Structures are given as structure tokens and as C-alpha cells.
Image (cartoon, rainbow, N blue to C red):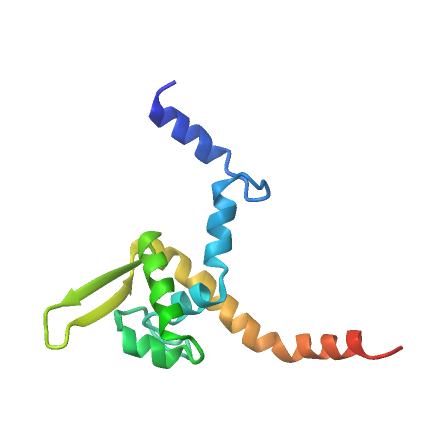
Length: 137
């Protein structure tokens, strides 16, 4: 069996329910809170109504209230490593750095955008269930 055939067979056998499957690790990474919010926001802003477009680091920091500079930098680096985001540095004073979804990132963008919108739409229901579950019987 050639290396290409082995890769094709392994890909066909990915099963995120199995602990040893690399897709489980990827699922864990993309379901991280900051990854999800960065992918949802990248270019479409806090309301998620716009189309994806390149954004500067400072724009992302403003949109993502509560993210520390360290966490934003680490998350953007991991997204770049995974091939979901590209980083472009323009030689200006100071250097202008923009981040943009790659084709791979765009394929995930709508899914995480919908997840964010679902969480916002159903938060009251979840809080009501918390109150009911936590109340003494």
C-alpha cells in the first residue's frame, strides 16, 4: 500500500468519537470559546451580519470584549497554524497586520457564526432551565 493510499484510508476512518482520532483534537480546538468567536467575528463584526473580510488585530480586540492580548495573539497563531486564518504584515510605520479567513476557514465560518447566533437566541431558555434545576424542590 502506498503512502497516499494509507492517508486516504486513514481519512476515511476518521471518527471523532474515538479518543485516538486526530479529528477529536481538531474538534476540541475549533470548539474553544475564543476560536469560535474569532472565526465568527472575523470580518463580519459583532452582529455577524457582514461578509467576511480582513480585519486588523485592534479591530478584533475591540469586537471580542474580554479577550486578553495574550489570548488573542495565541489563538490567532493557532488558527494560522491550522490553516484557518492567514496573517498579512504590511511594512508601514507601525507595521499593519491583518488577519483573514482562508478557504478552509471560510468553510467553517458559517457554522460557528450560526452557533454564536444560536447561543444568543437561546440564552434566556438556558438560564430558565438553570433556575428551575437549581431551585430547591
